[in-house]
Amino acid sequence: MLPGSLYCHFETKEALLVAVYIKGVRQISDAVQAAIARYQDPWDRLEAACVAHLEAILHDDDYAQVVVRVRPAEVGAADDSLVALRNQYESIFTNLIAALPLSRSTDRRNAAPDADRRDEPVAAVVPARRTLQPAHHCAQIHRLAAAGPGGQCMSDTNNKIIPKVLVTKIGFDGHDRGSRVVAAGLRDAGMEVIYTPPWQEIAAVVKLAMEEDVDVIGISSLATDHLIVPKLMAALREAGLGDVGVVVGGIVPDEDERALLDAGAARVFHPGSAMADIAAYVRELAARVRARRVTL
Image (cartoon, rainbow, N blue to C red; front, side):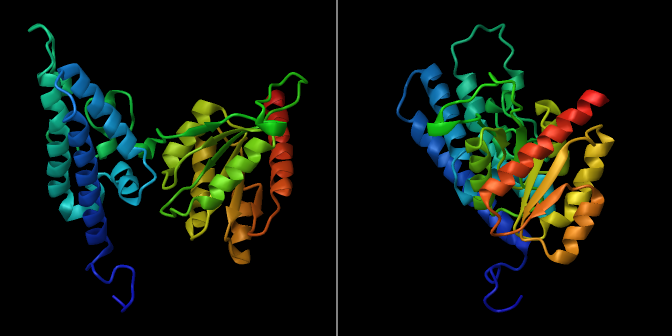
């Protein structure tokens, strides 16, 4: 490892990931314990724990982001210790549920964490996991309603097309400031925008695009994750979503742009592109997508 490297204090990137994961779980655990300590009633304690858990995993914090997205099975030899750590945290909820004044006939077994769920992150904790899917399944999305002048919510009263756009990031690029700006800009231009946090898997993006019936997918890339856009295009076609328009924005070298266009991406926007130009093109692309669907 070169001196001055980001990972100079860790032997491997995996070791860094494990350290961040451990601290993140401890932070969430401390928040939950502090929340339940304020109450005596079993129901109040369970409610406080669920609220604290959700607030912690949805917090815009680097540690929380790793805990939400990393599954123990993804970190190799360290997965046993991470499974044990996560299960120790989940035992808080198991104990809270066990303390509820329920009848003896109540089946509480579904509240107990499985001993070896290596494919679930802490975000899928009991009992919140009954309503939350792991983040790599795009559970945490933000809907930005189409807005008109002054932030007023727009409706389709004039029979105008309101594009439905999914703005997301695939791969390991966590720089999401640009994607947030674009998502807000499209919203302000009168579009319905679905925004996800970064680090999404291709399968999750395809699933969300299908469920939401989007017209356009916007992919932001500030590292090299645009190189897996061709895999996204192939996955969309395989899922029967070949008509969805895909736009890429960010730092994309000229030699890579041609490959993206050849793979089926509609357009690549580079740094410095005007928001008005991006919005105009996305609206035009969405109209073409809708027209193609009508003729099929």
